[in-house]
Image 1 (cartoon, protein in one colour):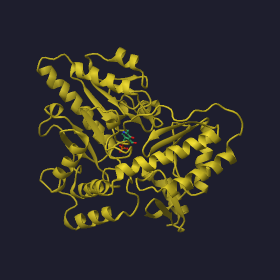
Image 2: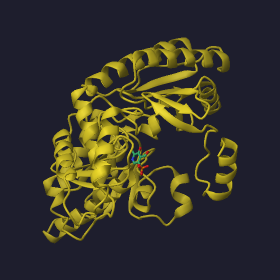
Image 3: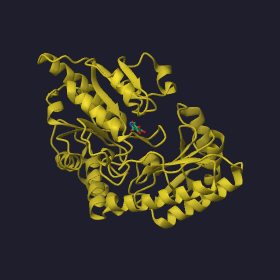
Image 4: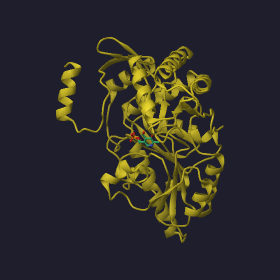
Length: 417
Ligand SMILES: Cc1ncc(COP(=O)(O)O)c(C=O)c1O
C-alpha cells in the first residue's frame, strides 16, 4: 500500500487516537529512520524514549532472533530462563528487592498502585493507621488505564472517562508546603516522576523529594517514583532518582527496557512485597521469554559499551549547545534536563509547532510536549555530529520562524545532580 492508501484505510478503520505525521517508515539504522522513498530522518525522539540503542542494533537483533527460534511465550505458569536474570539486573541497578514484569508503562504503574493499596491493607491489619488515598503531582503523567489515568494530572486525559479511580489528590509541582499540607495518615502512597517527562522535562527539587521520603517513612506510606521515561540509563544513571541519592519503596520502568519490544516492570522493596501473594495480581504476556531476552541484551550493551557515561558526556554537550542557542534566540525561554532527557522551552505554542514543522522539513524528528516545550529523547548512541546537525537546523528554523526581538530568557533552570 502507498502512504495515501494507508492514510485512507486508517482514517476509515482505526480508532482516531493519534494525529500521525504523514511519513511512512519502512526501515531504520542507528539513529536514523528511513521512509519508503529511502529518505533518512535523524531521530531525536526514539519512539518516545523507547529505542535506546537506536535501530538495527546487532545485540538486540541477535537476542531476538536466537530467542524466537526457542520460545516466544509460555505464560507465567512455568519457569523460563529470562525473568530471574533480568530481575537480578534490575534489582541490582535500582537498589530494590523484587520485580514484577508486565507489558507497558501504565501496567507497571497500575501494579504499583495496587501494591500500595494492598500494603496499606496489610499495615491496617497489623494495627497501623493508614488510609487508601494517593498524592500525585500537578503536570504529572502516569499512563492511561483507569488507575494510572486517575493519577495523571491533565484533565483532558481523565475527564472524558470519569469516574476514574477515586481517592487521588494533586500536589502543586515541587511545592513542599502543599505536599506537607496534603499529606496525612489517609495517604497510602505518594507518586512522583523525579523528572516530569510529558510535563515538560521538569526535575523536582532535592528538598521536595527528601520531604516526600520523610513524610512517607513517618506513616508507612509508599514512595512510588515513576521512572518509565527517565529510567534505564536515559539520564546517565540507571535511575533518575539516583541523582538525588534517595531510595523509593517502589519504582516503575518500561519504555527502553527491551529495546523496542513491549516490557514493563514494577520494582519494590521486600517490605512492600509482603503484601502480595500468589493469585492476587498477574499478567498473561508480561515478562515473556522474547522480551526478557531483548532486555538482557539492552542491559549487557549499556554495561559493555559504557553507555551511562556516554549518555552523560553527549547529553552535557547537547545541553551546552542548546544553552548557546538560547543565548542567540530570545524565543528559547529555558533549557532543561539531564543526560539525554532534554528540553528547550519556547515562548509560544504556535512557535513550538512551527519549529517542529521546520525540523521535519529538514528530516529531523523531535516532539512538542506541554504546548511550548521541544523535547529531545534521542537514542543513547547519538553522536556529537548528530547533535551538531540538530543544533544548526534548530538555529536555522528559529532564525526563519521566531519573531526577532528582545525577550527575557534564562538558561539552565532547575538542575539536579
Ligand atoms: C512517566 C510515565 N509514566 C507512565 C507512562 C505510560 O507508559 P505507557 O505508554 O507505556 O503505558 C509514560 C508514557 O509516556 C510516562 O512517560
